[in-house]
Image (cartoon, rainbow, N blue to C red):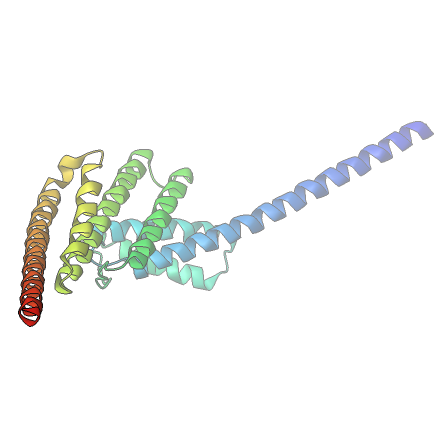
Length: 252
C-alpha cells in the first residue's frame, strides 16, 4: 500500500511538473506572438506612411491596409481590452471599405541616391514578408499572395529604372557624360537580365536612347580633346623649330 502511495505521489508530481511546463511554454509562446505581432504592426505602419508616392497605387494601399487589419485582429484577440488597437482597427476597416477609392496621400520621393534606393528596397522586402506571413495566417488566399509577390518584384524593377534614369540625368545636368553613360548602361543591363524583359520593352528603349545620346557626347568630347592635344603638340614642335633656328642664327 505504501509503495502504491509513493508511486502515485511521484506520478502526481510528474504530472504537476508537466502541466507547469506546458503552462510556462504557452505563456512564453503568447509573449513571443505578441512581440511578433507588434513588430508586424510597426512594419505595416512604416509601409503605409513612408512608401514613395510614385510607386504607391490604390490597390497596393488597400493591400497594406488589409495586412494591417489582419495584424490588429490577431492582437485584439490576445488583448481584448486594448483600446488603441481597437481604435486603429476601426479606422482601417473604414479605409478598406472604400475599396479602390481608398485615398493615397503618400508624397513622391524621387530615387536619386544609392541610400534612398536601398531604403525603398528594404520597404519592399518588408512588404514581401508581410504578404508571406498573411498567407501563412490564412488571411490571404495562396493565389492572391502569389500575385502580390509578383507585383512586389515588378515594383522593384520600377525602382531600379527610376534610380538609374535619375542618376544619369543628374550626371548630364552636371556635365558629366561619362558618369551618365555608366548609369544608363547599368539600367540597360539590369532590364536585359529580367526574366520577362518584354514587360519593360518601352523603358528599355528609352534607356537605350539615352545611352546612345551620351555615347555620342562622350565620343565628341574625346575627339575635341584629341584635337586640342594635336594642336598643343604642333605648337610645341613649332616652338622647338624656332628655338633651333634662333640658336643656329646666334652661332652663325
